[in-house]
Length: 439
Image 1 (cartoon, one colour):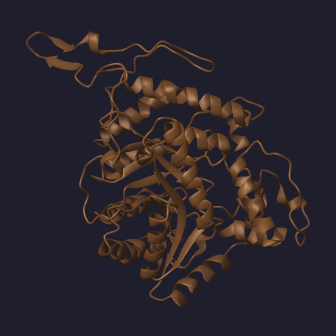
Image 2: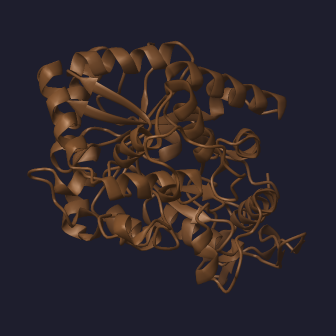
Image 3: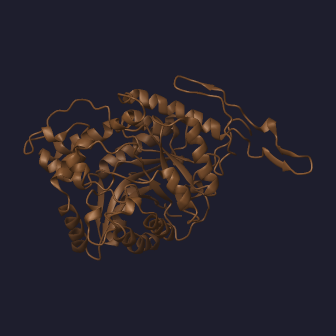
């Protein structure tokens, strides 16, 4: 059988491009409008997408107010409130929510995701993030953001506790014998009693073992520490989109690290983010992208660049090259990606800001056939197992992808025509984890 793509839809914000909400025909309130989000996810399910991916922020984005006032990402729903509601209006599509290992607690998070997996009949996934926005610390009683290396040590222990809690009950623990009055077998309940560097958690979890055993584990770190965490625990990686050569390097590195860690690399799916602009002709698609980019205000560009660099870009001379930067305690991979782009392209700060203000990652622009050509190349040359698709605007960009690109991928045998399973693990071809305490 021809190797097939996996497709997630990156839906928070509902479009990654900063000017999407200003595009003609767009729904400007889509990030915070349930009826729109319901429409979007049902369209994605009609297109047989693997999953609906909802990122999260625990603070208003740390960008200059001149940029923030132009940002549609200033508010959105809590993913773990929204996704159960969306589970009730869908049947097959996976539901991925971000959960922070820096500002949540393992017991609370394990309980929420186990509940989402039960409510959705096995469609939940946890996107592990260490939270790169330093302003989030100020919302949780801290004066300073936890150091990068410490955040990742905490994340690794957090994962161990959460997965241990998910295994609190054996799959057959619940007898529910009406005649004897025995509801569950205490011999099939495990008390974790975890005591580590960051956490002390007794357990057991007061939710039955998830339908999938564990919700699918998703991770998006691209730094060396992030790659190692992905290799050790992730089952889906939301990789930064960039040149295909860089994507192949990342893909090969993380898969090799997974093998070194004793894992089957096929049980780790790497899906770079890619914004897709579709047209009946290349000229039409390019015109859509040009119109979208023209709606980016300069304040937005500098604000986005500041967020990516971890420093205030307004202090730099706009028409000069990007100066050397101090090490950031925010997203190291985000800063490195923008610095590399500036150096390789000999870009001024102004040019880099214009790029950052739109979307600075991989983009596929063209006809459905041209987009399918590009996706096929990435799939078959060791750059990706699929994509987390980002739409230039909604609803039009999403509808065009489902109605135009999906049929072309299906015609080539690169994407499913129907769901074959019911759980997200089945969509992704991932095994159900054994309970580490009960066989």
